[in-house]
Image 1 (spheres, helix red, strand yellow):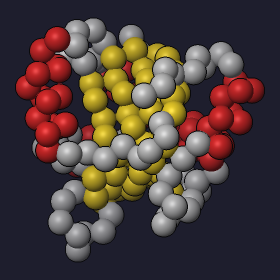
Image 2: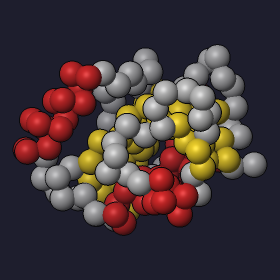
Image 3: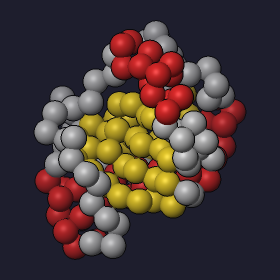
Image 4: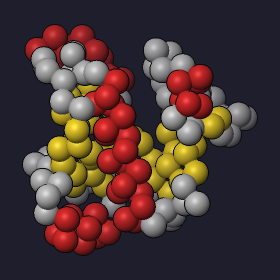
Length: 150
């Protein structure tokens, strides 16, 4: 995994964001701290979720959040939130900064919407609605949500 690009390097960041299909948005201490890129899409697995929930969160202290995004080749014009990871002491302000960074990436990429499957029951439908997300694909298993940008 590569390190996140500083947000101040706007010219380089915009070109890099347009070029890369897979990446992540980092936020810390209530502010967006950078955007990084991956060569391959992030795929959430049960092992990864277990590791984050039971091992990594015990040792990852601080106020930080990382959201992984993919721009699938099968669905041009959409971004998917592949996985979200927060540190133990993450505040709501930091999570909102990461979401705002994700929306900025979506604007730069000129996509129509951001799609996510919300697995955690700790994230309520009401909270998602307050943030502009609405239920999507009710016929599919799981909690699918979409944030339309157009």
